[in-house]
Image 1 (cartoon, one colour):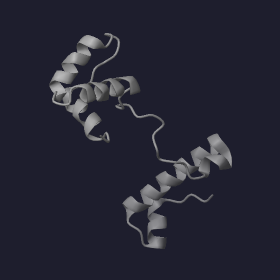
Image 2 (image 1 turned 60 degrees about the vertical axis):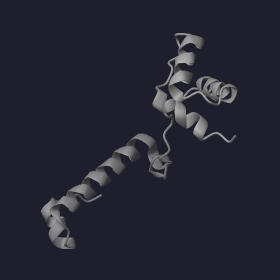
Image 3 (image 1 turned 180 degrees about the vertical axis):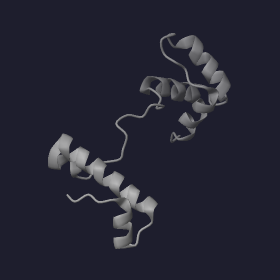
Length: 108
């Protein structure tokens, strides 16, 4: 791998200095990845997150949907208040603005 001063590469290839710095930074990152993981580290990886931090637990979502099916005329605030009383205190009940999308996405 041949390293040169950014201005030299800029003149040689007709690139902006900021672009040359970006390329050098990317190349250094690739080199560090190769050092740590070998050739396997340079393959394309999925960009999907490992976990979804704000996703509702399945039991909370099921309780919301069950409450809405039982009492279809109730709104999000009333369902949330009932869940606060019904669910154990260890389970965090979502805000009313989060309760509504649970049953709007559901197929009736």
